[in-house]
Length: 310
Image (tube, rainbow, N blue to C red; front, side, top):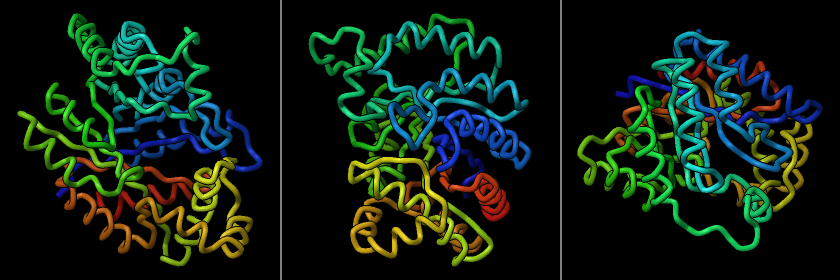
């Protein structure tokens, strides 16, 4: 039985609105989810995309922490290859100093963007950056250990290697099922190898009063995701536009969307899906990512999920 449930917010940009609107909605959603009793609220890092607004979790985290009182706030995650471990340690040292006992530092290896943008993020662009993530992570942890106050550190991942690193370093592990829906064996190995395993599984879910309404609302994310995977990213479209797109591109869009796990439906449907997800991974905690065009629909989805699963 999962006792804790959290939110992963990718700060989606709805068509007809701005990135600033999306960030303000993230703050509003965090307040809402705190009132509902969610345990964690993590924000993601993505670069150079018209679909997702948060390029700097370290900027959005304090805005959310200042607007809330009890919910844990963190990064899901900081993409460490782009940054100096010292700078990350100092930034999150400041955050934990300001919001003691509430800050999580989720660290990831993925670029969070396309190769050209990842290259542009480098300070030295004379050559490709080395693949030295383990060394970066070791340095980050060493610098954090020297601090009087430090955030809780999580390793994020969706691959076997990330699970091995988390076990070796004794870190809690946040697995992205919404990226790789075939990770149960990866998490099982992490549990076997780790002396003190703790697992968050993050899944994609959308809940409405009926299965039909939930699937209608989910069409916006399905269209946005299908276009992203075929190299044509854009803001999250309204439902009517998405329904027309899916009707015209049904088979192709479905083939792209089937790469991921989507838990969509009424409270009963979503409860069954999330319980099955938690059981499949033996999760200690669940984290939910939801994208809709309408902000109120996203807030309502989190209400229904918390009532059903919480």
